[in-house]
Every structure is written in structure tokens, then in C-alpha cells.
Image (cartoon, rainbow over the protein chains, first blue to last red):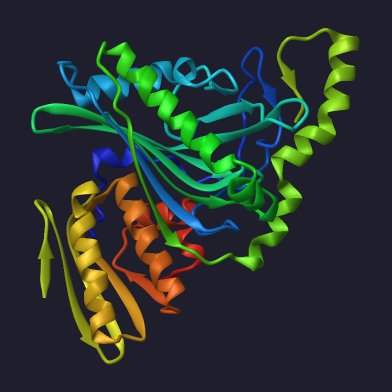
Length: 248
Length: 107
């Protein structure tokens, strides 16, 4: 490989041993991100799935770059109300952290986790998960031109991070709930461009084995840790009355 | 045998029991078919290990890294050790960030 630096290399995040959150956005619960290591599709516990969600923005003249630019700017607004994204003040830039606060049926309170922007260029950006996140892997948001039509795509390559999450994805509706999230995002995106949303999904099991050596990941489980932290957050809210809650 | 996309090719050859995949060009979404074809060649050759040679690769984007992850996952499921050679310092870093290097010898 050439040792001459390519200007596009700045699209990649710089190496980090552990995640650092530079300020908690207003209203966000910042838990289970600070100090966590990043984990990719090879580190988790469950079956490795590739899921590709696509929507053709037929009738829109928006370029792939314009679509990705809007995705970067409005991703929090495009998310469903039970899965809130809080980007840092600098937005979707390589190395930045997005805090995620989600609610899940049957789980009290808000689950707090996050993702790091691993890669961002004009036509795509990719987020990578930390320890404790329900998934271990990547999500890539992109757009391309196909036969003169701009197509927006979200592709995840991930496996459940630990046995509890794997059980939830397989038997508690977690997988379909997650698929609904990305359907929702692409539907909302199509609405931004005033086009009908015919969202398609293809899923492939890339590796159907369970990685039992990674069962220990349950120690970092953000759902359990967020639930255990709920009384602490409630007490802080009562005594301090703060809006942004940095519970790290 | 070479498998080509617009700006990418993957050529598979055998060196003893190791399948060497020489990668050339840019590894992005356009490289998916060539990656699949190259892995099929590895299986056909009955290789005992895989060496990915990145010496002639110009650029890898995040979709390209996902393709490498997919190939690595399939190789691990088939108990085929994988190594990488010819990576620049930048992509050595990327393989570390993405934790690919946890499962791949970097030569």
C-alpha cells in the first residue's frame, strides 16, 4: 500500500483506547459510554447478521451527497420517539460520540448507550458500537445513484453483544423492533424529500455460531446497568433538578 | 484467477496450503462481488489458511472494511486462519480501531 497519505483518510476516526464523551447534550442520559472500548462485528456473542434497508427516492432530484448531508444533520429527528440520538455539538464527524437513549417494552426507565462515528465522508457514514451496547458491530448510512435514482441505504453488520441481548433479539421481539427503527428512519427520510417510502430489507446470517468466549460481555450490559442506575438518576433529579444528566 | 469490479480486483493463488488473495484498487461497495468470488476460489482450492495482500490497495472505506469483516467471519466459521500483509500505517490503525486485528495476524 502507498505510504503517501490520501486526503480521504481523514474520513476515518483516530485510534482511541476508550471512548470519551465531550459534554453531555441537554436532555441526554450519559451512561455506559465513557471509558468503554469499541467492539466490532467480530467481538460480540450472538449470530452475525447483515441487514440492508433501502429506499429509492424516486421523483426527487436530490443527489446522494445531499441525502447523506440531510441524514447527518437530521438523524435525531428521523429516529422514532423511543430511540433518541444525541450527537455531540460538532455533529457527525469521525471520532465523535452519539449518545443513545432508548426505551424498551418491559424494561423500566431509559437505556443509555452510544456509538462512535467510525467513518464519515460525503456519501456515507458509519457508526461503531461500544461494550454494553445491545449490538456489537457497525451501522453504515449511505446513498448512491442507481439508474438515475438516488437510493438511501442503512446497512448493519452486527451481532448481539451478550447472551441476554441475543435472547432478547431472538425471542423477545428485539430483532423486529430494531428493524422497525431503521424502517422508520428511511420512511421519515423519504418524507423529507416528498417521495413515497417503499422500504425494503434484506438480511443474511453471515455467521450462525454463538461466540461463547464473549458471554462475559454481559458485565457491560447497558440495559442492566441503566436499570440499576435508575434509582440514582431519580434521586439526583429530585435533589439537583438538572436537565442534562451526566451519570458517568 | 482474477475477479474484477470497476476499480477493484481480487486475484487468488496458492502458496503451499495458503490461499493468497492479491487485492488491487479501492475497496468499497463496488468490491463486494469480487470479494465473494475470491472467497469461493479459496474454498475451491481447499486452502488451509488465507493471506490478504493489501500492497496494491489504494483506499478502503467503511463499506470495504465491512466486506473484510464478512470474509473474516466466514473464514473463522470454516476454521481458516487469516493474515494480512502490505497494509500502510494508516490502515494498520484502522484494523486496530475496528478490532479486525484481534482476529487477524498483521504481517
